[in-house]
Image 1 (tube, rainbow, N blue to C red):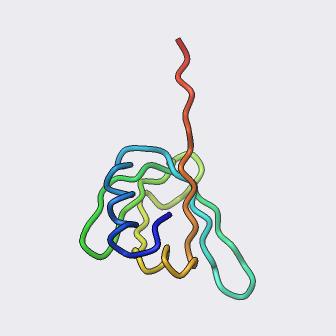
Image 2 (cartoon, rainbow, N blue to C red; image 1 turned 60 degrees about the vertical axis):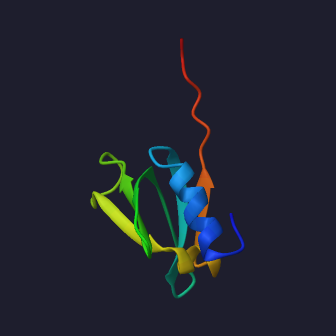
Length: 83
């Protein structure tokens, strides 16, 4: 990901609608892994729409600072299209 907040936001803006895997620090040595689509970006936060089948919550938001400080790690998923 980027090294500044602006670079992180620009990267996420370019990937709106694409699938992403999120690994977040859950506190007390716990990590939370989720997957979904980058739905929207705002000046301070971005929203990920989660897979309804796997997660009870529909959407989740994180700040760009979370990504910068590695509290949240994002991995863009390359989806293969079947013909």
